[in-house]
Image (cartoon, rainbow, N blue to C red; front, side, top):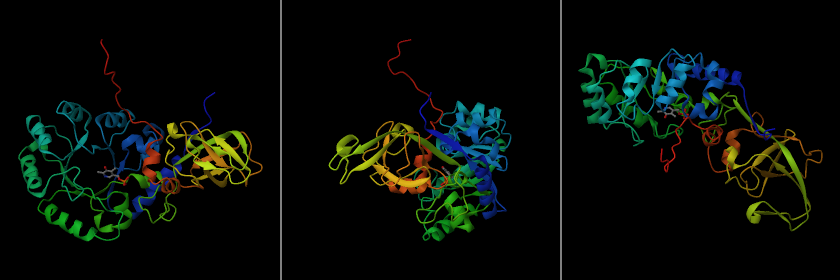
Length: 358
Ligand SMILES: *Cc1c(COP(=O)(O)O)cnc(C)c1O
């Protein structure tokens, strides 16, 4: 038997969220962001619910090829572009589009012009990826000079789309540069889709909202009519009766002031539950609210069962899902829903043995 912790995925909720997002920006094409293994939801598991998207966006060629293998025939975009020129051939063969955000990528393309969608990125203050304005206009001019490199879209990414103010200036600044070219435009992540309709343009790029979590600290997913796709459940595997003065877990982080019934849950930081979740982080046992006690360990955490006299070994536990949002658990642990969701599934990546002799 495996441990009782499980991830349940509500594919209809993902379809619903996609429709809600589409209604927010009905005239834009929708590029579903499925990087980090669909924010921890496993791309193959949720793939069938992505039908209504017009394109997929990923972070690496491996992820793009996985989408193609699953049968995705519409556009796929590498959000960070290719990492080395050797990847260009595969992109051409499988029709994988790419973000162009630094000069080397342009040099590689000029040597090996591949006819794929190119999303040229303007740095609008995030200072992560993208060209400064002068270099941006030069990049467009260089690409335009090659007939094979003419499938161009203009892209930028906001650092602060979750805020109410300050976006007008950023959007105005971007428009000044993008309006010099006649190519389509893509700006909006989930936060911008819901909060800043002027950013919708030709392509929207929702990620977190698809999975039913909120991009905002001050508005819940339910308020946005988004439904959680992921539900993480486990069970009580032991019960301890603590006397006053006794502690639970590593480091004695919580000590009972009075006799307390404590449930031990098969879920820990190795399962993606945040170790820094403090005493009092909400948990559902038998669908009723209780909270964590003491430090989260690798495979286990502890919950207060004082108000749940019927709870016993085997009682069902929900770590997050329908009646307890991942955003609420994340807030309690000082992080965001994105991080907790992503931690539930590994990314496809490569493990190398540094000391391998063969
Ligand atoms: C991850 C990402 C998105 C999606 O962001 P959400 O906040 O999850 O909607 C959109 N655009 C780019 C460039 C991204 O890296």
